[in-house]
Image 1 (tube, one colour):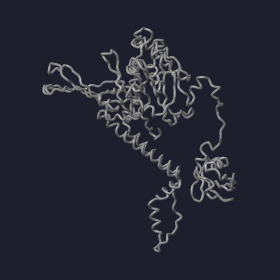
Image 2 (cartoon, one colour; image 1 turned 180 degrees about the horizontal axis):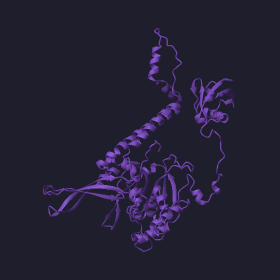
Image 3 (spheres, helix red, strand yellow; image 1 turned 90 degrees about the horizontal axis):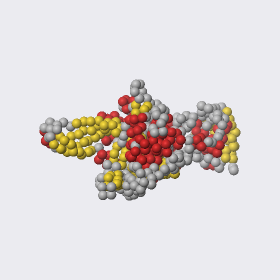
Image 4 (cartoon, one colour; image 1 turned 135 degrees about the vertical axis):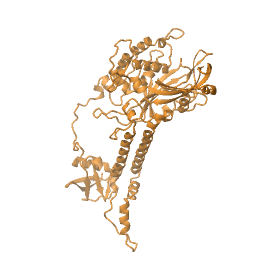
Length: 548
């Protein structure tokens, strides 16, 4: 190891430092950290007029013995001091099962198959991915009966939070079968319980929670239904007779509002994408008696969304009753779906007017953040080009001064008053612009939507969970669930870190981690696993101060 002794000057003090020329700039900065208490990311070390970067090769900066190096920067709030941990460090082997299950990165609990109960296991896993639902269930003080599905769901989720093993959902399963006897149906040979449709289980569980699970609603005297608040959408529909005679006789279109818990994706021979199926589901033909014609007539019912919930359920209507075989057959057609869903086009004019400014600003902010990240990566890969790019864009006033100082003889007079931005200063300026844009984004949120914490305020959703089915009919085959991994939550600050983009795959009691490519492959096209129910969550928006 070759070293060179230099002198570092910081805030009037001088430090003798032996520089390892085989190391990089970040190693040198950590040496200075041990001497000055200034964290490496707060240091500005100047070598020959330029700032030292973390990945700089110290053998190529031309250091000489005794050379004076300037350093600027001050310690952070903690003064650079290394504090003793306030809590005793506990190793994983010394933890209880419940403590280990609640550690960052722990594998979540699976659910044992109790005989054709994969439909229920997959449904419960996706529902459990809604943090607000878990919080509401913890506060549930309703019936404490073993036959109350809501109380049993609360108990089940509590048990699942304290283990990484697969557990049988027997208490909830029994309560569900008593409340909804269809789930207690036996196989034709009477040897066990029959397979069921996961979407039917999802709908019945939501119906039960809608009735039982109440949460405080601001200053309102009456509590609100959790399901209505966070998962309920409203459709405004116009029913109009297709026959000209009805209009001529004075029959007016009829407008109604309906509260639903899901959007249906109708699949036909022209459905290739989720959007196609949603469009199909919002237009319906029906036969009913016309009062003015005094006979049966054809009507068209056109619906638009007038309220978007924070959590949106989308159901692929893949099963239909096949008379010749007397069971629910499956539509195998491939239907793709996005990881981010824009539903603005399906909304009423009034709701679109509130959503579009926010949606468009979200995209603008994302582009700015993407440009900053791309520039950061480019400078890291080729720092010399990054410096040249910044040095080639000095302020216009300085350009003017430089031009004014050019002598008529053609020689260029050197100036010393021109300064250039460092990488840190350049990034800080761009990040300030993004912060200002996020504050502006918050100001664009419709005030009525802002008051409704259970509503979507942008019209954009991100995919969080998928229930899949493998097989040719609803009464057979196998159901599994995919849930997107959340970022690790800091136990001190409560802030949630960035997500790694991976997903948990729940195959009954077997739980594994998969890449996002596995999700995009669930579009169907055969008897392999295809998406049946999608759970989307409204994208998070910044707060008034621009933070997420």
